[in-house]
Amino acid sequence: MVPSAKMTKSLRKEDVTRDWWVIDASEQTVGRLSTQVAILLRGKHKATFTPHVDNGDFVVILNAEKIMLQGKRPAQKTYFRHSGYPGGVRLDTFKDVMNTKPERVLEHSIKGMLPKNRLGRQIIKKLKIYVGNEHPHEAQKPRNLELKYK
Image (cartoon, rainbow, N blue to C red):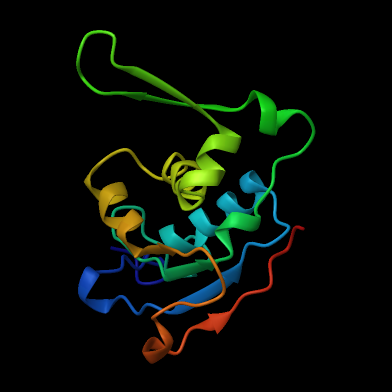
C-alpha cells in the first residue's frame, strides 16, 4: 500500500453517537418535511455517514395534525391498504386519515424514503410522531431544529 494514499473511514455500529431532534410540523408541507426528516434518520447529514450502518439520529415530530398539502392534493391523495382477504381493498383519502390518525400520513411518507430492507425497518423505529405540542422525551434533552423549507 502506498503510504500517501488516504483511507476511507468506515463507521462501526459501536462508534455511532445519536442526537435527539424536535421538529414542529405546523404549517409544513408533507413532502418537504419528510425529505429532511429522512436525511436525519438515515444519518446523511453527518460526515461519518456509512450506507450499511444505522448512523442516524432520533427525530420527534410535534403537531402532526397541522401538516398540509398544496393545491388539489388534499382531495386527490389516497392511501391504499389491503386486508389480505379477497375484496379486502381499503382506500382512505388524505382528509379521512388526517381526521382519524394524522401521524400516519407523515409515517407513510417518511417510510417510503428509507431503504426497503432490515436497515430501513431499524431506522424507522427512531421516528416519534405526536399529535399536539407535548412529548415524553424530555429526559433525552432533544434540540429544536429549524427547517430549511416552509
